[in-house]
Image (cartoon, rainbow, N blue to C red; front, top):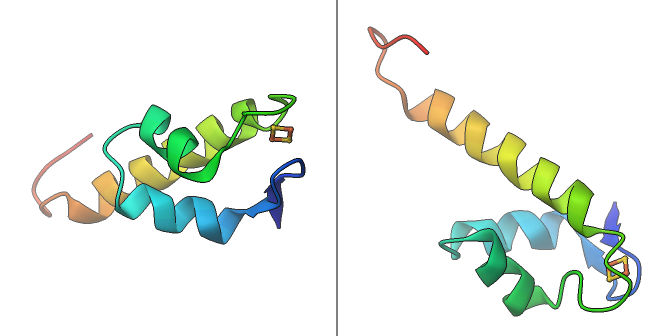
Length: 66
Ligand code: FES
């Protein structure tokens, strides 16, 4: 699914960039995300936060609570 129509960036590309980036700004710079109309930024932030939250949950030890 396309996240950014202007740059042709897909959700898979976003996920791959998340693995090698330390911040959302770094992801944007690498991919060019939001560099045209900016309409994709809100959805990309939500997707990045969801992925990070899922990763944090998966890395949590069994006896840890939220
Ligand atoms: S949709 Fe991403 S910059 Fe326009």
